[in-house]
Length: 520
Image (cartoon, rainbow, N blue to C red):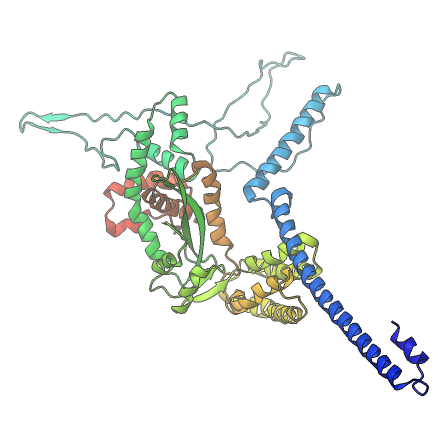
């Protein structure tokens, strides 16, 4: 029924009362029908809006997982996966080039110098002189005169080489006193053991730094003609772990003297013998601040679960600034006088996922704003703490204030529950913690230092598969603490560990700091 047309055609002056009443009733019924249709359209629009929001969220999630599984962008692969992909690509390209050269009849054109870096000056040089077959000129027979030398250097390597150290101690007797004198046998981590400190250090580095399981170390030694049983290797690791524990404990004491720390955690599988499978344990990691002049320290703690009680126990009575992610396990710490720092890299990832899924323009602008903040940090990398504080106040603080205002305004027009609103909420919820660094010259902008320290552990898990027991996990954490700290201080781990194992048996506790892998 067309209500407007019916109104123009109806004449109330000629209609009977019954017809008038019937017409009014028809109009009322039609008006009610139109109102119901309007309500239905409104409800349908609301449902469509909710469905569109949900579809966008699901599309984002699906795109994220597809990107992680199939994409080759920089953040889809781990650093190790990207390295593997790149090295495979380079290998294939060079192999194809070699095959083309074999098939080509024209001689290979010598490549132009690539400006490669010179070989390290600290490496030993082994000289090999190559004289001509004759010192007489091949054309006229006259004696050749040396006018110079052409020197080229090539990098060489000597694979792991097992050899025997023979210690000969002559014995001398005094006929008058009837005594015998000989050089003392130096103290060792394992008295009367088969191996030297060098071999002990090599085994530890293989297992905990290169993540080679003991059964593979056994195979390597057997391949070189030396049989070292797995049980012997296990004994060495156990005893060395006990000997090195005081050094790891001392690093923990020194770490807690710092006023700015990074913290993070990563799952590691632990064998559960009673059930014949593994269970999830956690390696908690703590690191000192890179922006302060003290030598860096990295500490690992093995715990059976992810309960925040472990972090609370480790940092009991500690006060300072703590850089952490948004994991709830750290929240109770923030009520004990510890000041929270939030990782800007985590906030960036929320917008990166959104942009990677559908090239969202708002996410792109957020990434550009965050990139500008990192550029400011990069330029101040070599500044003193005071210079960096002034630099941040002048350049970073205004950009952070502008970004906060932009996010607040943007959130008002963002659909509730959308991926964009979630990314914005993540930043706004912890905004004071994200921006606290800009008021100082020594606080870090993100948690990347501790994540970089944890990354080798993630790679190692693929090799050693699981920790055999809680004790094994704690031993691994202590040794990893020492090796990671050595790497952070740019100290060659094997050389440090070899020297430490030589000195440790006779080192008094009062001088234990001299053995720590800290730069002086």
